[in-house]
Image (cartoon, rainbow, N blue to C red; front, top):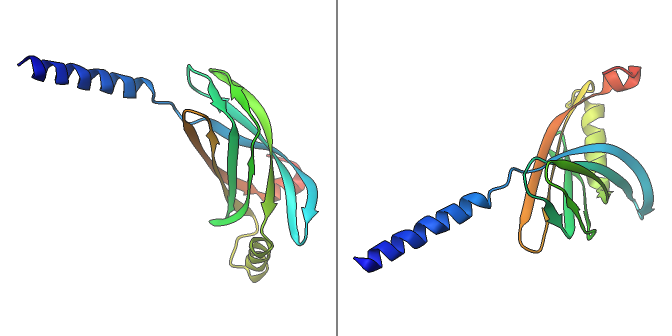
Length: 155
């Protein structure tokens, strides 16, 4: 009987501990893109990100991975070993170098030229993770880029 109560108490504490460790994923947005020194035929860019922490605890990280998917196909990816923290209910900006695969670039261009891809709106997805010493925090955001609005400067 005592053994059963002990196991029940340990199980309850474990569940409470797991529940308190749950974190909402951060909201990550692309706020800028700048060209970077290219290597060979692969263009490189500096992807400027804004990370919003929607939790009541800081997100500590010592590395970041990002992948940019355009029209359902991997377009660019990159990693950075930068370290930092996004305070609770706050935001931080960071820059990650990414490489665009020449094959991805060619495939996207062929899709646009062949008419298989709509030229007015381009669907994109940004996914990745902030890696820390004790946990990894994945993120994902998506949207559409309206090329007509970009050309006219409206939103």
